Image (cartoon, rainbow, N blue to C red; front, side, top):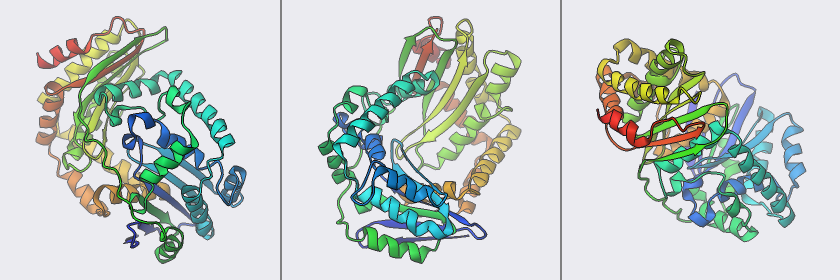
Length: 420
């Protein structure tokens, strides 16, 4: 497999990887315009814009967009995260040009029909309402808000309903004008693709765009804080976050190995102690996520009202114990899980196309898999123990609780236990 990368004169980037033996391809446009690029009065507009891309262009109606891809057996979708918005499709190899044409059309030529804006506004308001009815979704929005209080990175991707209710056609067009320049876009494709053909299509479709400077997002500051909402639910939902490295810091590999060993699988410490030994919950996990300039290690569990206090304190105790006796065997197992997960995921052209786009966005290039594996293998048991100590006792923390949580400890109490 060969990765190729090019750039048009206006800064538009193209990256692809041909995967021999495949009959299909994944292709998409990744735009560096996510939730953290919004001003406060724009909160939720990147996601609204993603929805509107499928509601009609100058050449196609909403139905024609869907039919163009589904008539050839493919699928098309999009997502908005805090740092990117992506529009992508999966098709058979003979339909790559069609997919490219449709994706380019919805990115470049949305008409923002006022009637469709009102229809989609209703859909998004329903999506916001559904999120509030899903405790193990909304609790992560609250945790993010407490982690990065009063900052773009801490705001929800969906946005508050009052702002979504007020967005106009001009607001959508204005966000495109601010953020959808050629230098903010990456065309990424993997599978049965021809890089030279992609380059030609990209030049024809995006080569006319004028360069424009993207807005630099506010530097993130992990603040910490507590969000607690009492509600009559079957379970008490508990989520704890601590600052960890951003994805440009090689320490991200140590952080990910640590969270895997702590709560990344059935053999992990939290799963074994909290669920298997004590039976305090059905679901518990730890994970590490990263952004350009920061990251978070998060622990989540759902439990009963009378057990949430015990679960919270045991979680802190297990974090402290990991700093003392994390074993070489645990680190080796976490390392193997991390490498296997990455390599198995890359058997999918969709996952591979997304990886290419993200790496180009982060580094401006695609580091080899061998380099990444070498960095994972270079993490020692001592590295993980040192990181575990940092997580256990240092720095601010964010806490979110939802459900029958009156008996749960406060953040101040958990911080005292960390320091003890």
